[in-house]
Length: 230
Image (cartoon, rainbow, N blue to C red; front, side, top):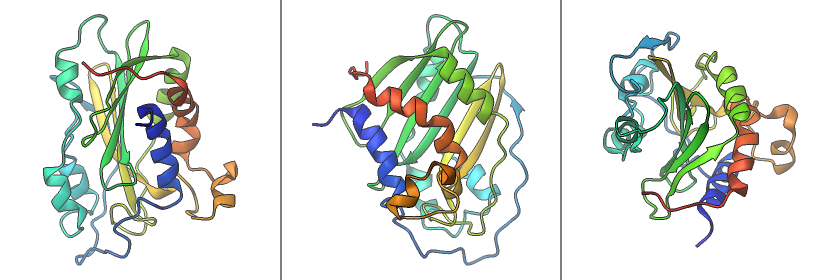
């Protein structure tokens, strides 16, 4: 079986060429609702993330009405909140969770973690047994990505759909020292404007902010030897 880390980077690249756009053509029957910015909120316990994402999808005008809403209500959640509650060692001072399509109708989850002195990545997939446990990540790469992404505001694409090249395609959750926020990721976060042409996908000038920011981290992950999750 291919290495999990290789599968992760391959899944993103597969997404980039349009394979994951499994629900093209579906549109909301009701007019989309306008959404406000997803601001930081104080957290009393844990990371403060709702990993069903239903409030986020509703506030962004995706649900109800989009086919993905039925799946979202029952989707397998990555065990991030569980691992956070059981965390031992240095306290987590900041964290990011990126959930994206894997090209086969499931959602990959990459959890990035920062303590005072170290950084880690942790990968989850709802349907695969070949999981990857906590792995080290250079702190400077984590800090660069987090400082960039924590200031983002959610894009407002013309189509309030999910898994659509003109709509939304994933989720971003952020945590820092007792505050959290969540937002939807749009297709334009990968490539702007969207294209399925390989020559255009390889054009860095057209990469969206997510791929520009995380590509160095994904490249490092693809080179690391995975270990079995506990």
